[in-house]
Amino acid sequence: MWSSIKAAFWYVLFTVVLFAIFLMVYFPAQFAIKLAEDSMAHLPIKVVNVSGTIWNGRGTVSYQKLNADVDWSFQWGSLLSLAPELDVALEIGKETSLSGRIQVSDSAVSVQGMNGALFVPLINPFLMSQRVSGQGTVKLYDLNVSFDHQAKLIQQAEGRLLWQEAKASYPGPKGIENITLPDVAGRLSQDDKGAELNVLSAADGSSLASLFVLNQGWAGVKIRKRSVDLVGQTWIGNQQPDDVIFQVREKLW
Image 1: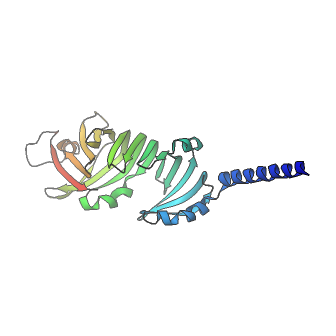
Image 2 (image 1 turned 90 degrees about the vertical axis):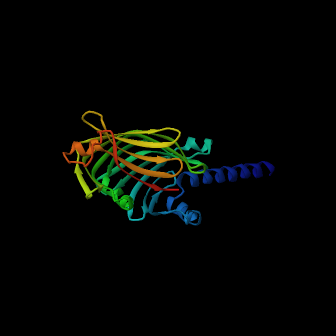
Image 3 (image 1 turned 120 degrees about the horizontal axis):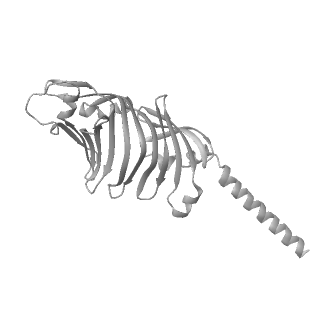
């Protein structure tokens, strides 16, 4: 009698453990999103059309007017460090495709090994206040970015970019200037002040412009006279090629 009870107990326990493992592995992602709706209500993004499991799934992330199709794969080992890691592949239309690894902790968010192509007009709406816009496609190579959202500090920023079919518009002394550039390279770097993307001529490596985000919350753009010379336009004044002829900045936080 007692042996039958023990056998039944272990059978039930084994069944419960298997069921728990099954739930962990195959728990539907759409149910997980519904459970997290309240905690995500304050975020500026929406997640819809979710399928698959919480470990391997697919969904659409919406931010303002942007809709990105996202595939993700959860890294089990990251549970031990309490900093979940996801391998992510993102697509926006036919022109934008990015892939990399995202790590999230209580204090920081990081993107590691990001590669792919970004269609520049997608970011133009975010530059409207600065009256800056661009055209073409930017290819990303080994982009690594880490941001401490509690301390508001950029911990890491490195990578390479190549802007093909580069066109840009920006405010000049006579109004909006429109320029067409040969292929433009970019080098992302970081120091104690923040992060900077140095925009270079792909032909000779000379500096054309820079985009920066400071740890104090300021972001902006600097345009050097060399960029005007490169496209054969004239500029009033006797500035040297490395001189900054235009600069705008805006407070982000």
